[in-house]
Amino acid sequence: MKNEHGVGILGLGIFVPEKILTNQDLEKMVDTSDEWIVERTGIRERHIADENTATSDLATHAAEKALAEAGMSPDELDLIIVCTATPDMFFPSVACLVQANLHATKAAAFDLAAGCTGFMYGIATGTQFIRSGFYKKVLVIGAETLTKIMDYTDRNTCVLFGDGAGAVVLGECQSGYGILGLDLGADGTGGDLLKLPAGGSRIPASAESVANRLHFVHMNGNEVFKFAVKVMGETAVKALDNAGLAAGDIDLLIPHQANIRIIQSAAKRLKMPMDKVMVNVDKYGNTSSASIPIALREAIDAGRIKDGDIIVAVGFGAGLTWASCVIKWGKGANTIA
Ligand code: ACO
Image (cartoon, rainbow, N blue to C red; front, side):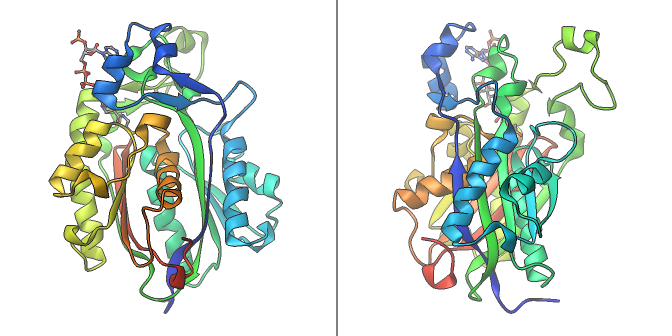
């Protein structure tokens, strides 16, 4: 059943831990340099959770802000989706932990795993629940504590990631506004390029798996880089096509913040000038599922998004996965501004 309303973002909240790890700090930990990290990745610093903070804590703080902005109480929520690759534990899900923290007693809750593309998959999933008329208000959260699964002896990965969370409340908005187009994809044959090998049913946790450092992120950076550059432009164009739009219609691109060179290459493929591309990877590093809502929040706060703008958010990540969504922004649409 197709709903006559649009589906838009009614509230958006982000949260990052206070503690900052700079490139200079990393210079003391592994054989790297501020110069190398900035030149190859664009990252200058990242926020990191302390030992007492888990993903559900960041997720809950972001959710509270999103609900406040939407002017809603938690018991109005029908569904909570938490997109994460770094849950507090296997089960219960982070979404259930957040549901309890918020006292969102009427909400169903589940986690969604799509690597760094998680938030885009979550937006797509939440949108379908509302479009179908099954639910009215869906909280979608991208929350990660990637630094908890980093090998701080591996310079190839430990300089890249940071922690954070972003949450949106999705609900009905004026037709023609909100989420206009979507594209999702996956290529499981590339799963080995980016993975956390142990701790699951394939390699259960053992003294040996710990000694072999298999509970940390393992990545083939060069291959992930090539994949990301190729797929970002393609998925953005497909989502635009789904919305009946073209690359020239984009007012602001919000790419997953993994590496400035990936972002620049994707913008080039879309023939977009960098002043139409949101970049904040320098301050946060790669916060995986949280990077797009954090970038969106900062773009709004910087006055870079105005009524009627076409925003395209593009994600890619482990799986391999990718996804994009096209949003027509506007106060009149009940989306925030
Ligand atoms: N400091 C100094 N030197 C380093 C560092 C470091 N932190 N890391 C790697 N190097 C060295 C390498 O060892 C290599 O040295 P060698 O030539 O002596 O062997 C040299 O730098 C070049 O290494 P490359 O891997 O070719 O460097 P590249 O320019 O490709 O940059 C990077 C590496 C930054 C990892 C890049 O490939 C990248 O960003 N890839 C994508 C990663 C990504 O986005 N992952 C997240 C995906 S989303 C998700 O779901 C989590």
